Image (cartoon, rainbow, N blue to C red; front, side, top):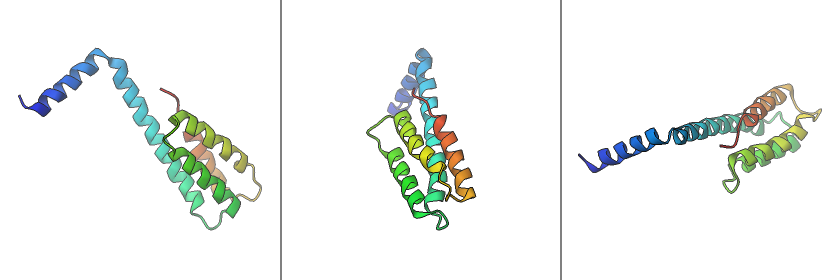
Length: 114
């Protein structure tokens, strides 16, 4: 038995004894995917020349906030949602940006603490 096979079997046995651990890892992966999807949507708004400068700045700030690894993912999502909720009410926001923003906020709202 090789070393890598042994360590792989050990990990499998560990997950069999602790099924909650694999569920936690699965939830973490789901949250990472949701965060990535929201970031892509927000980047579309931030990179658009049609979007007013003040809105682009707030969206870029929220993207930076989402990438800050010092806080938990749920806290980062909540902080970004707070910023984005304010800008969503801006009457100068183009309709495509508003719909994209709502989509990103929806993804962020589904991120939960493990």
